[in-house]
Image 1 (cartoon, rainbow, N blue to C red):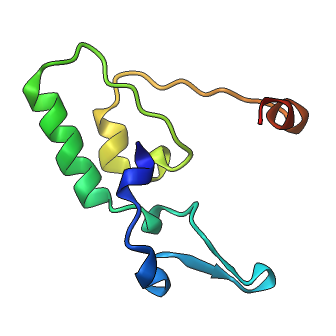
Image 2 (tube, rainbow, N blue to C red; image 1 turned 180 degrees about the vertical axis):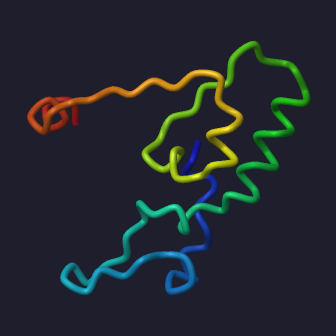
Length: 88
């Protein structure tokens, strides 16, 4: 899960964007993810050749050019706001 790669939340100011209006941190930024660890683990999966497919999803995947270069296929699913609310 991408959630396994979030940087330590105790060090928020280093990795997370602070949103003053909300008095909260934004976790939906690429800097919040430890991409070095993510790449290391992903490359180990690829080298192991145990899987025919590796499926990844997440809004931050396309913010990393190294990751994009590893993808064979990309699928985009567009949902309007009402459909997103219905699915939650």
